Image (cartoon, rainbow, N blue to C red; front, side):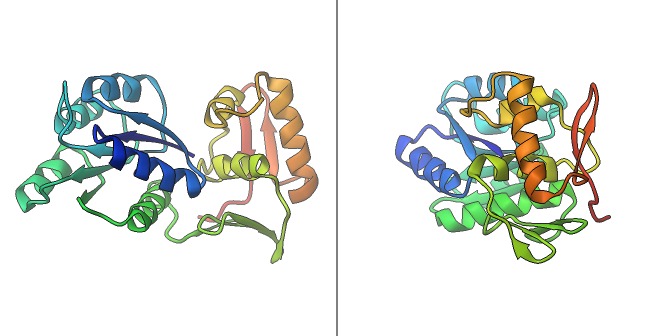
Length: 220
């Protein structure tokens, strides 16, 4: 899962990024509003943590521009002031959640996970696809109730597919979301999918030629 952290305070940004990385996210950090606006407009993220008091372009303006441009990724707004008026402004601008500084990193991670689940249409921490279950809190996978031993890369691939229910995920998007892995071409991703299929079952991951990979058996 990819997260964009937009925060000009380097210490806070580093702390948020470290907490999200420890929770399994791939994190990019931006320190000003103009750069954040451009990056959020060009790239896909699963969640954005957005400070309001930014140089060059304030956070509310960034958020309004994203929403006006049709960018719908979930956004958690951070603010040092925490007033009710500011919270209302953030929600009206298109924020999905709001946290006042100072905050506990654990709470932020929990809110990020909960927000992603709500956006994906899942109410709990466990995602079920037929006989397969993903516990997104513990980052574990079970088949018929038995824990599977997956590599971090295999889990990340399964997590990407699980958070796109009913939608084939193109190989290019998978490669982008697995940023930092040695997956430069379709053949490398196909090999990763083949390894994962041997562990979760051949019928769990469907190949849609020309479209990508789809996780089958999701609950309504």
